Image 1 (cartoon, rainbow, N blue to C red):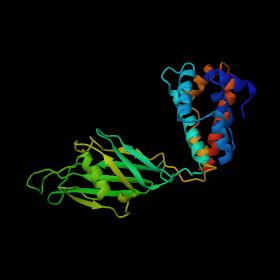
Image 2 (image 1 turned 60 degrees about the horizontal axis):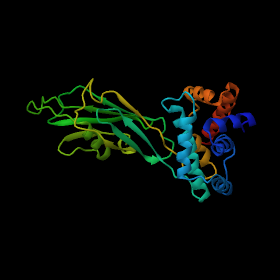
Image 3 (image 1 turned 90 degrees about the horizontal axis):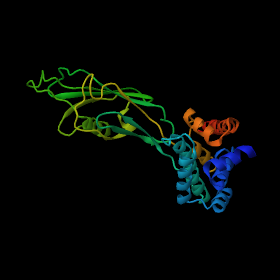
Image 4 (image 1 turned 90 degrees about the vertical axis):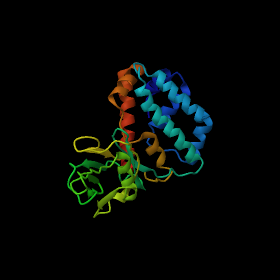
Length: 284
C-alpha cells in the first residue's frame, strides 16, 4: 500500500480524491478483490464506463509534463482495464481467453491471429521471406512453411517465367494472406510445402495489391505475436488485466514525479507498481 503522504499527493495530482483512492487501494494492491469486494468497490465509487472515462481524462490532464499524454494513457489503460475486470468479477464472470495477434509491416499490413487462444504464442514469431524469382516448374509459385511453431518462416519463391512462356508469376500481399488462410490462391498455381503443419497455426487478414519481392516488399519482415490471454479464474484475472506485463516506463515515471511534486513519493509509487507487475507475471 502507498503511504498516506503519497496517497495525498496522488489525490492532488489527479484532482479527484476518489480516483486517487482507487488507484492507491487497488492498482497497487497485491490481493485481487473477490466478487463481493469488487461489487463493494463499484458501489462506493460509482464506477461505470463514464467513471472510467473520467479516470482516463484526469490522468491524461493531471500528469505534469506529459504534453503528448503517453504517461496518462499508460496509467489510464491500467485503470480502465481494472474497472472492466472488477465489473466482470462482480457479475461472477471469468475473463475469457484471447488469441495472440501479430502484424507483418507491409505497404498494406497483414494481421496474423493465432488459432489457439491463450498466452502461449506471446513472443513467438512469423517471418515472411521472399526469394529471388526462379525457374519454377511451369507457372507455379513456391511457398514453403519452415522453422518451428515458435518461429515460423514462410518463404515465397516467385516464378521468373523461364518455364512459362517467359511470363513471370508473383503473389500480392493480399494473396499471401489468402495463402496463409487456405493453403491456396485463387487463379494462381502455388506449390505449398508444410511438413510440420505450421500454416494452420494462424489466420491472416489484410494485405494489398503490391507484389512481394526479393529485397523489397515483404522480404525479411518479422511479426511477433502478443496480446494472448489465458482464461484465468476470476480471482486472478483482475491483476492480470489491470496490470499487464510491462513495468512503468521511464517517461511515465518522470511525469509522475513532476505530478506528485516529490521524488520519494514517485519512487514509492513506482516500486509498488513494478512489484505488482512482477506478481502478475508470476500468475501468467
